[in-house]
Every structure is written in C-alpha cells, then in structure tokens.
Image 1 (cartoon, rainbow, N blue to C red):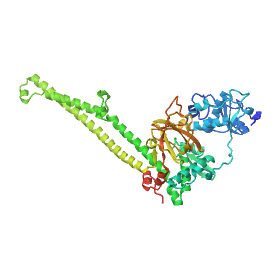
Image 2: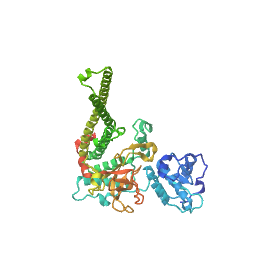
Image 3: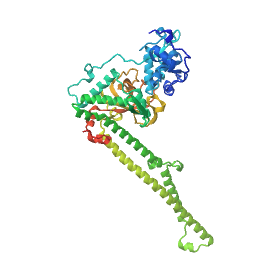
Image 4: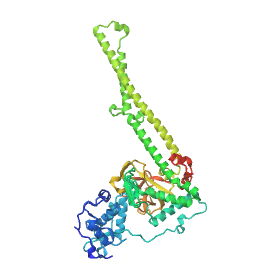
Length: 531
C-alpha cells in the first residue's frame, strides 16, 4: 500500500538506544550485526507507528516501536534491517502485509523466539538486488483480529472414526483434531504477559475490581515454554471428546499428566544413578584391571590400598631382619640400638597401616551407602519404567521400524550437557543434562524429505506445538540412527553437524489411555485418585 510523506519515519526524531533483547537476537543472528541498530521506543516513534497503522517499523538502521516490544517483534524488525542492507524492492517504498519480506521476517522472529540460529535464513532472505529508490519503510502491522478461520473436523479424513478403532485410536484422533483446530483458528496458547510472569515467578493478586498487583512470590520457571501448555490443552480437548461421560473424561484427563510425571521421575532417577556412580568412580577405578600402574594417577581408594600394600611390604621386610630371641641376648650396645630402631620402624609402619585402614573403612562405608542407593534407585527406575509403558523410547522402537502415529506426542530432549535459553533469552538460561526434557509436540505426519542426505539416516517429521503465543506448524529432521539427533533445518550432507537436541521417543496412545486409569501409576506419579 502507499504511504503519505508525513507518515514516513525519519532519523533524529528522538534519542534512541540499543535493541531490546539484543543478546538473544545477536546470538541467533550470528554474523549479521544487530548491535548497531538504533531502537526508538514510544514517544515520537509511537506517533509514527500509529500513522503507519503499525506496531513497529524499520527504516535503514533504525527501528521504532509503539511501546515496549516483545522478543518476537524486535527480531521481526531486526530482520527487516538485514533485508534492507541487502536491498529491497517495495511498491511505493513501503512494505505490505504478508508480502515476501513480511513472511521472511516472521520466520526469522519465530526461530529467534525458539532459540534457533537464523544465520542461514538471513543469508537466503529475499532481496530486491539493491533495486530501490529512496528510503524503504517496512512495518509490523498493528494487531488486528484476523479473518475468522474455522477447522472442520468432518472434512479431515485423518480424524474420522474407523471400524476397529481402539480407545487409544479415538484419543489420538481427538488430540490431532484439537491440535489442527487450534492451529487453524490461531487459538492463544498463553499470553506473552503470562509467559513473562511464569519466568519471573510473578503472582497476580486482585485488590479491587479492575485493580491488581504483581508480586514475585512464586518460584521462577526460567525454562518455561508454551509447548507443555499446548500439549495439556490438546490432551484435555481429546479427553473431553473421547470420554463417554464426565467420570470417564476425568479418568482419561489424568493420562498425560501421569505420563509426564512418571517420565520426569524416570529421568531424575537416571541422572541420580549416573551421579552416584560418578561419585564412586571418583574414589576408585571401575575394576582392578583399570587401576593405573602409576600411583600418582590412581583414584583415592585405589591409592590408599596401594599405600597400605607398600607399608605392609615394608613392615614384613623389617620383621624379617629381626633377630631371634637367643640372638638378641647376645647383641652388643650398638646391635641393641639398631634393634630398637628397627622395632620403632615396624611400629611406625603398623601405625601408618592403621591410619590407612581407617581411611579405607570410611570411604568403603560411603561407597557401600552409594551402592545401596544405586540398587534402590535402579529398582525404583525399573518400577517407574514398567508403569510408564506408554513411553516409546526412540533407542528401542526406532530400530524396530516403529514410528509415532498421527496425534501422538513426540518428545525431544538434550543431546548432552548444555545451556538452554528458553524463549531465546540469555536471562532464562538453565543447564540441561543429556536426556532431560526440552520439547513436546503433536505428531502431524511425515514431512517432505527433499534435500535430505541419501542413505535413509534422516526423516522429516511434521509437528504442531505451542511454539509461542499461538500454535505453530513445524517440520523437524530426525536422525533414525544413534544418537537420534533432531534438527530444525535440513541437515547438509556436505557439512554435517550434531544437533543440540535428540529424539527421546513418543507417547503410545493406546497405552496412554490405559495409563490414565492405572491407580498404581497415578500414585507413583504423586497424583491422588480422582473419585
């Protein structure tokens, strides 16, 4: 659309500063410099944005915001700056809603909010080949209610009941329908304000009608992401659609929470086992064959045992030099002095052995305690694993040729110990260890495998998840061989790289429906039986 000259932004209208959320944006932008972009917030920038009918705008190396912006909005405008550096061709010098540049900026912003690199996306962005005259103005349109879109489940063959469907089939089809409906109708998962409150630990108290106050009284959830909220919403929708009555709906509704609590317990126990074993391994080598020959390289307990053997050998050697009682009686003064010294040395060796024995006993007692803990944790893990049989572990089921079915939940986790920036923001950093949960999504079918390396090691999976305020449709790339890596961009066969995520597995809908009604599983998960 056109633009009058008085609505065109200009430099120097007010003092500006660095981009809000700069750390998160620069981390995702890589070599595309964002630190030099001038940001104007409120004031005259708000007036200009209002005249443009926009929430924010970008012109040259300057961006303006009507009010304090979200990470998504800032990333969107920063993408426009990068576009303009490459050259854009805009009708009338101003961007239009849903043009190629807007779509590209939205993809960049979505990826930044998800904490992913956008270097390649910016490298391959649309440009006008430098063909432009005068300043270009690009803007993010002010929020408005989109044209109503509705999802018609009766026209979706994937969610229709079929003869022979199990209770799990009905449940996963209902979950799939719920996910597709929320995606099509752009149902809000969680508001941006609610996301920030959860990450900061803010609790809202209503003082009077229309008057409330926020206080940081709750435990901050720095790694809060909306994927869990979306999974819960779609599962509750599925349970309501599947349950024959209120009682059955209530029973079914317990399924996914029970699964996730058991899953978390199992992960905690696994990490606990690793920690206990690591502690034992710090004290001694895993086996006698692995004890190094160099005593300086030995672990504490192995070194103590080595030192004890050395002192015992020395004591035996000294004892072998002692004269017999008869010989001792015939010693002269010098001989008696030497005998006394030898006996003193023997006593010193005995004392050293005693001290070492005490130290060995103390460490062995702690090792025994940790071994008992390992045994108990192993038993607990086996119990939890048995109860949570809905968990289809990738390492077990992918080699058998199994894949998730439409409407089942896919779980991804940390591929190794790593920092994780929830929402792409450094202040929300948490440290995840290998196997810890990162993301849950609804499986939406096999994706386009075009461009994947040959050999069948990679597959494209389509998912629907709470990737932000609204549901998102994604395509992930799953390595169906160890270590079951997950990437968000098609892997380059010429420059392979390991993803910071891995496929943990998925949730079997049939077993999940049974799990929902398993009181023993609910008790183990810490959920009270619902009457």
